[in-house]
Image 1 (cartoon, rainbow, N blue to C red):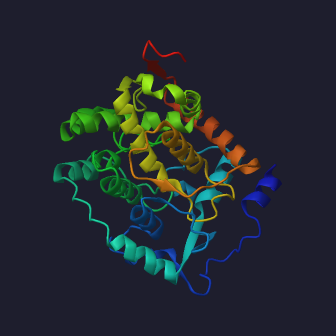
Image 2: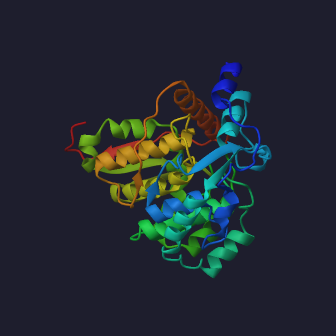
Image 3: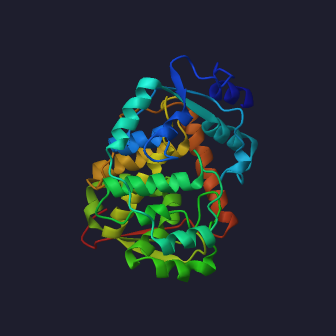
Length: 340
């Protein structure tokens, strides 16, 4: 199995990281209008969705990547770590024409509002967002989610996505202690706090695929949904969202998952989180509840690697929740008149 994985994960891929002729290293994207926003993220915000950039970028191995410096350092098991490293240990090189096109389009996007001073100080002084994320720093990821929301999900607060991970990420990394929850709540509106504390829990339910599979089987009755009950990740406390809050939350999740799209070559063993991104997009579209402005280029995913990654992801997630006493149980409540 290991030999098969190595062949499937690294098929004849060049071992150097020198940019091909006429291509610019990924760092070139940092010369855009906002320092730190890479080209992949700039392109997503400018377009309002995702594109497979296989004709505009070449993705090579990054020999300097260290999984233990990221939020995935707690991942256990040789095969899960091998798969995760394959997905993350890469570096894109962009064609010069693509660099010019994307940065020009991004420069026309409205600039985000500054972070409130009190919230910014709380994040910097009371929390720890110093870990690396899947692509760049944790703050790079949070900033992208916030900026995309501000441009493409205007009716709702982008601050939710700026702090969506503050009460825990999927790998049991907690930027903030549970004891500081009252301090956080004092800095947010009730709407923002409700979605912020729900975010890590709903994300885990999505990554487990149980919630998506159940909802996909009841597409004809989603208008009868009354609420969902679940457990807060950081302390397993019971939480509940009504139907309207749930649809808003799912659109927050949709925006967040966009940041896990590979730069190019989507069909060659896409990461499990990107598979969830496509699953949420498909469900919200079919349910008529895709409220954020999101467009994703059609992609077909099938085969051994996609199935393997999904199975590994489900097992790993269950293990992480078990380690902290977090229940992945949930309950969808429906209108009594619905027949499901």
